[in-house]
Image (cartoon, rainbow, N blue to C red; front, top):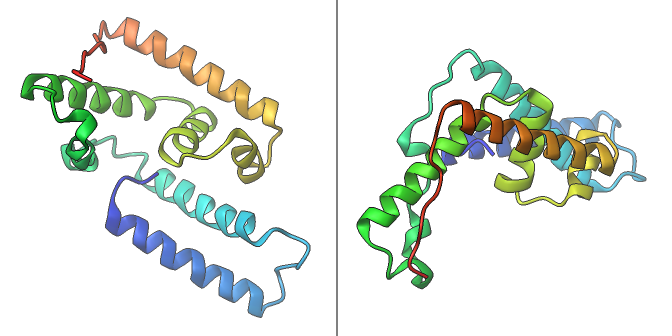
Length: 159
């Protein structure tokens, strides 16, 4: 979700530190699903990170992984096609930052965290329908932003 390996490692470490402290203090009940509980801690730390950096709306080219093109599926794409595809990813990621917090959270968890809507609902403490609704409104808002900014996010890859 944070798109930076070192920051992700820091958040992972902080997640386990908080979890260990909570277990030692007796704040974890065995009735909870441990994985969901850990994800919630990590999620909260990521949200804290987004809030902390909210004032800085800088998107770096280095924030996006380049290894996506190393798979055989992309082997026949031209350099131009790859650049266009990379630019589309960059534009979409930049637009996501302008979504309301609750919508951005669902988009990040779904597309960058690869979580199901059920998992998203558990992590964000909302119903599945609320998570789906937030995604719907996020997509509507992203389409509006694309139209307002007159962006062309179409690309054609050779696969």
